[in-house]
Length: 294
Image (cartoon, one colour):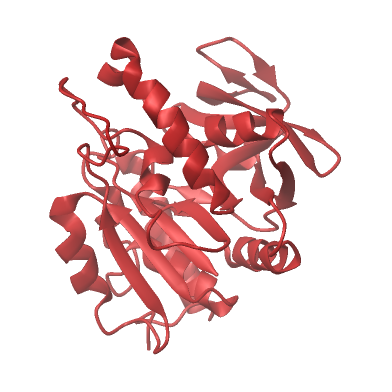
């Protein structure tokens, strides 16, 4: 089983490259805790998608740490990585988005895989539940979203973007991206759309379980995307949109798998202190060793 970590973001609101911040008690990156939890639950292949200039940084950080038998691929998400026969001559200030990041791994993944953000902490139970799902659905085309409760994913320091899910039983119906969510008394409000939520809704934190069939869909959509000059200038291809299109076309089904754990992220610089304290506490309680890879 493969874990793909997306670590190509720029951290504009955080003030620096948060995916490479030493938040752990012994200077570990946050993504190392994700790797650790995944390996404990049977994952044996780690893929990190980052910028070209950080490949050596990630490789050096992880050198000699992973147990024997664990495969590590560190790949660059590059603007020049386009479908065969496609040429793009416009200016592009940032990467093509999370779906393109996943597509970057098309040549190193040939089985079920989980996708996460490298700058989020998802909790050990989430990897256990994802692994159980992957084993149960190894030979079909069923995807999964590891879901979290909206109220548990907000920041005290500003608005956040979340994919709010419509769910029918255990089946995902749709994911609607909301860009400026924050707590407002007893409710959660999206300052962009003015939509109101109870806070009990399931949201996507970009923890997906996918099958290799997604690579062909991303490539086809990427070709269409690049053919639209306005889209190609500044827009991005997002994983939820790709999955939702496949779902609505009847190509896949998508189950919502409960995370059964606590999530935290480091959207803002002021989130850092809480993250450092949480990891220190978890280490003190014995959930993690220090150094992590003892």
